[in-house]
Length: 380
Image (cartoon, rainbow, N blue to C red; front, side, top):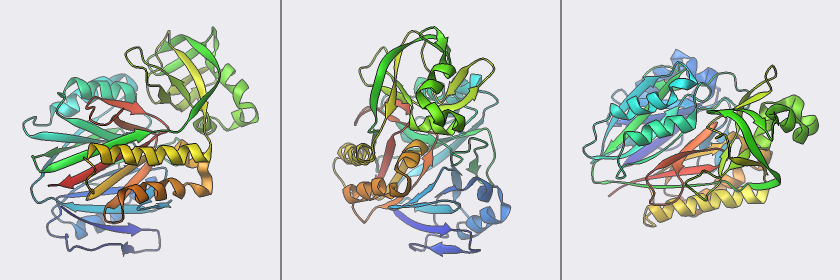
């Protein structure tokens, strides 16, 4: 397995970061970039010229990751040549959040199951119920196939997210990359670093990922009370104070962030389900907790790769972490690089949601928010 990376930073040309002469042989190219840049045909044409035979996939972001650096208003391009691994791409359109489960089910239904080792998901970030999407994905796969990935981002603007598949970025697409063969080895880890505060609140009315009432009160009104002056900056300010709940079949809290609000009916729409009857708590985080969470995610990923050195690492971290850490956000990337070492190619993006199993060696994936989620690739 070989990789090479380049970056477009708006200066009018691409900067080569590593070069293994993969132009004619790369099978997969991942591009993570600014929403407006990904719409432009000229940037896609540049990538296609560099890698004429590759499948080109990617998404818009809330910040692009290259090694231990974060970029904004750029495109980070990572090309991959597999010696013994094959890939297949599946794509589905999504018309509304109500279609999320069916889209996940149809998506993995397109993938041949024999020899399938791992599925990487890149999804529309706004018109999606991420938890229903992963339920649909899980329903179509057995326990021998792991799934990771994330929801596209749009800085903290929540206006439009895009998916790239062999043409400039478009809206309302969910994409899956299937990896096949005995040689490909996958590691993954996901952790947050957030802590709960305040009292437990009972979800007295919700429908799927739309929360209407907490303790019999309009959810948005109660949430604004906690936010105080920051309520005027919703929905972006909600990234600083997500909610957590414990699913009925688990003792591990799941964190959810707000995608949009409705002032008319006082509701809040989240990236994933908020089950009626569960209890939720507000979350907050410190800089140190988030960096430790990133470190733990990297350690977890290496454990599930049997402590091998990866060839490629895809980092998907939540935009909420970026907003909390501000100028120091690269500290979490540096901590990950310290764990993984300098030989691995590292790329990724800041997202509106992350997809990963909860712990090493689990195959069943979940939607996460506010985590650092890491996927490691290595060819034996």
